[in-house]
Image (cartoon, rainbow, N blue to C red; front, side, top):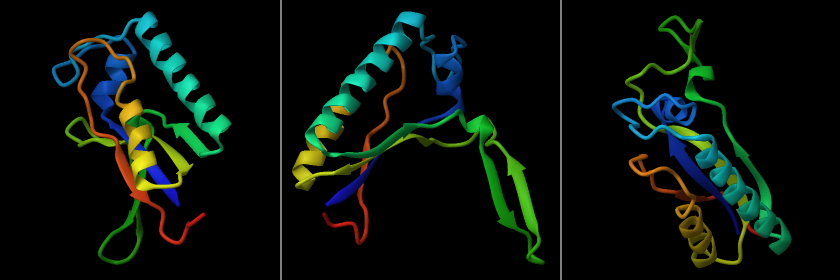
Length: 136
């Protein structure tokens, strides 16, 4: 079965990762913190590729680079750049994994939760969603 495994974040988190702490994400990430996170993710991705479970996985750019495309009442396109500061969590990165069971993908999600981050950084749950019609 294929699963979409998602990690979340906010614009404030991306700013803290750039060394700019704020009230929503008070921990300023150092270069060492960033390297620890990148190393953890690289090892995780390598293990998933070696096991044959990795289909795809990507980190996403900060929410400020987001573009929303909708329609107004007359059906005309309405385009808005980037979420504003009050926006909720957004997708920060994802993996598409081909796992033998929900239990296995849950083990992987638990491992993702072990990703190092500085003390005081917000923690978000890892979200698992089966991909409809994507049975192995």
